[in-house]
Length: 452
Image 1: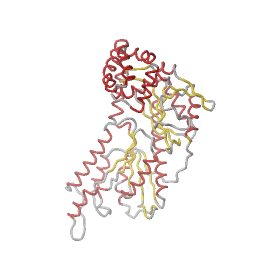
Image 2: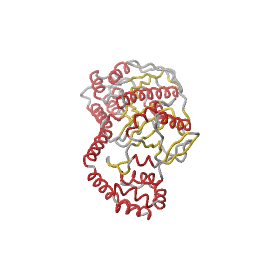
Image 3: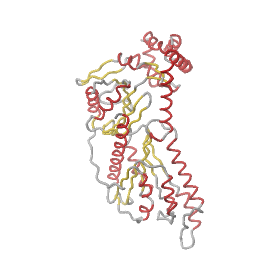
Image 4: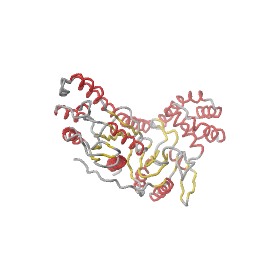
């Protein structure tokens, strides 16, 4: 069933400073305190990073989510939870021109589930800062330097140069404290070797210590807590597999109707406005018409009558199969965190001729393509080509909409129709509002299951 288009209500964007102070207050109301992991130099007026990295106890995560839901003018549009962190995407915040902001609640400082620092110890050593009568916390320099180093070295086997000079200064001035913090999980010898290499600035030696660090961490955790360590490693691996290879972390928005050029304009506007509404924002395109047009023109007779698209039309079938395989591969390929896919998916392109008029087709083939294609979470139908900067009533006839899109609409979770005499900017704003509303509904259901 198609949704009815309407002018979107312009929601007030919360300035970043107001949002940050509201975040502190909301957490305090839940009995929690905001402890920022890094990139806090510009708080509360601006955010120097792309997100806000916080650290909390795993048991406090439900209260932290409830605190975010209580902030006025802000809506949760995305949520993904991995073993070591939960990422929340909030819409309604004016962050350097963007409408959304990402907050990461780190609940474990670990490698493959094995802790290299304990969250409880880090929170106990946090340093307080007062802003407008409210208090937020930052990590001690020792813990901040270790975490900044290990997020690249231990987890990825690389050095993040933008943090290295600050790490080096902290390791030099707090050498004994850093060694003491590392010795518990890595042993005195490996910890001392790493600290000396950082102070010397010997990057090759630092990278070479990554493997001994991992082995020492695994050995010490295995010997001291064999059962719990094995359990955490298994949970970590299962969660990573689900997040990276299953389509449960993808939100599909299919944009159909209008010309490819019109869709491109609207999707580019959407991609700009939807920044930080998901961890990964990508667009997809299906346009096999160019490869089909040459074969169709060659098969047309003297009167310009185009052949009927049948199973015996090998080029069309090959292109359709290739597209279906590509679309399904995109659902399962390696994804990191939540992916929002704005798909420029003209399902009708294989059934049109080079003049973009309706092409003769077999109804059964249309139904098969619709049923075999990935199920969209939201289907947006753009009606009427853009003419002179305005959207005019559709001149393509009702056959495309009535014969093709309803089959896709039946499988979509939500459908929305836009167009008819609206300015392109209004259409883009309405599409943005429809996508945000759909994301809010999907995320609310996910959070209700996770935190009943």
